[in-house]
Length: 370
Image 1 (cartoon, rainbow, N blue to C red):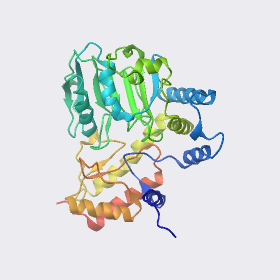
Image 2: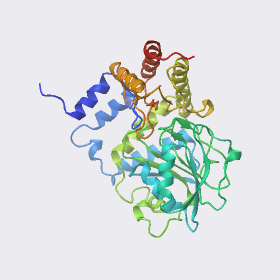
Image 3: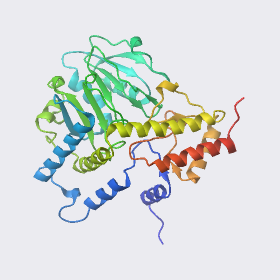
Image 4: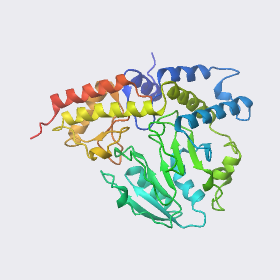
């Protein structure tokens, strides 16, 4: 028998265990089966569904309607189905929202916040509203520039394990990158003016970026903004100014309806809290082995992150996890440590297996607390 390709080997590896990858969340079995059936060869395959067809327009409308129900999105917000990934929005936000202003405020909460800040500085004068390093300061400590066109926050820092569980009321429009916790928590759109998210972590596959924007922010794009990247132009064309990401929209449609059938966002939020509590409890039991760098009140329900005594101990832990069928736990390359991702599609059995492993590893290889 021929050796499997790298891609096949990756698939086989994850079939034989559980993936906790931060890059993309798993689809629930029933959603994956439904998607696979829709990819059948021949006429009627979703892989060749024309975006100009009535069938696709109905699909897009149903997807948006379900999203609006799940998040209670007010009528004044427009939902855009875009390509380009969430990182593209790091540039598109200032291009679309600055208008005649030059200033924008950003919250520095970790790796992805800093990526957004660096890109925004190419277009705007960026002030740091608050620095959240391991702890989220009270909103009274925030210093938002009143001249700012908007204030940007990354609601959940996947690389650092820090999450803004409550979003504040601010004197300027609040913009949130929710790539890693959209549809995992209720939202208050009285506090938000724009939400954006790549779909691959919590509601689908790579290739779709959702932008949920208050229509009062439309029409402010700089003249040099490409038309297909202009929020107002895309809103006017129902996200079909250029070819939309048809297949990822189909997957999001199935995933959104799966969430709704299970009770909606409140149920997803409770599952995330319950799963993360179990992981944090196991880490606390191994306090001589595991170090949690984020303050308890600021720890993410989505991406628990922790460290071990040194690189050798970290490598041993990751190697043992792989042997136990627990994959993709290595921390972000720029941050290090160990990272767990508990997106909507992660099975309870995966979390149970991880918790049992963390306890066993601490007993067998851990360093006892003094």
